[in-house]
Image: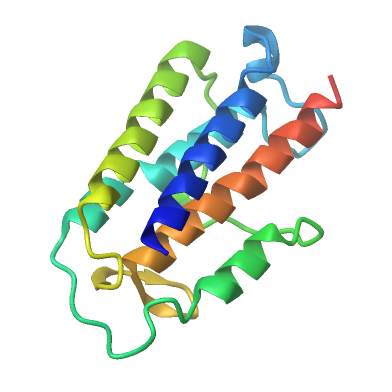
Length: 166
């Protein structure tokens, strides 16, 4: 299962960058519809969501007193239902400032690479006591990686929909 989620993360990362690469520098900071995010804001949101994950994966985990995959199905179902609108917590909301496409893309690639590299050497069944997912409590490393994957897939879909508006 560990190799499955890591392979999925690599594919998810590649798909996200393919979707992001479809925008020009001008489009990157352009709002396609009133009240929606720019492609740059979507990218910043994903960066804020992924950047701290290598640190979380590197913290001491604790043995699970439950199935370490208990929350995987629910997280996947929630985030892959593109018909539902979600509200992001404040700490991962993007700013309204213009984004530099090259700098943000580089930072995102570094964050994804560090996440995947760190995960490869870890026991994904351990619980991360320092990170709680709303409604689920502390997640296992496996659950966290599944969240990163489906959350990124959700925003890849968002970028693909935004692209159709340009």
